[in-house]
Length: 336
Image (cartoon, rainbow, N blue to C red; front, side, top):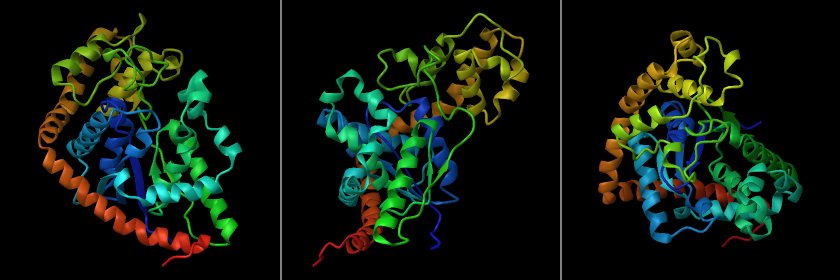
């Protein structure tokens, strides 16, 4: 078995504001990982257009997501930051993976069913096959690990299936079988208005989410307005199981304070939510405030962010092009 260098790839869509869910579920973890792995972080603008995007809004959102990464602590000197559309190898490998993946595999993808809803026949073909592009995003760099949330595990399993089938079909040991990196508290952050629904940029209620563009006062107000129940905070995790709003806020507190949910329950158990929410509001504002302020500065400095994306795209092309050439050779494409 070939030994591969430890390399991670992950990306985030530039569709709407970055939220607390993006930060706790992904970006914060990337910051911790960048010292330990060769790291590639991508603004996945090709994925964004599986549903129609206003072109100018998409350009601005791409910069904003990149600014959010940098403001959160992703270091362009330590890792590669770029936008996906500027590295053609992603789309080129995606086509090969369209021919490797089986229709039955894609039919099992639950996220397509959720996003297409009742309008399945009216959904774009890109939305249907985008898991193949996601697999290409990872494999074009021969990434060995991907930090994922619970809702992305199915796509990573598909990536593993595609890599394994490619290797088997062509009798090669070329693609690594990528491993997930799943983190602890608040890997799946839920809506502040409905603890059974994921925190989403598309929710019509601004109070359902904390945006990384919110200032400290807005962050604190949203936490204080977050939905809870009438029962005291429990002392054990078992008592949280049927209390989604309480569980969500406790998980957020635990993640922002680098503690466990049990620690938080032990500290606040038996209390009402008023004191807890005040403390969580202060904690959220203190952790996220500096990020939102730095992000705003970076968004005002377009040339700086654009230069980072340009340099990152060049590094990503230099890394991906030789791998794509090897793939073309394996597949049997005549190359000049």
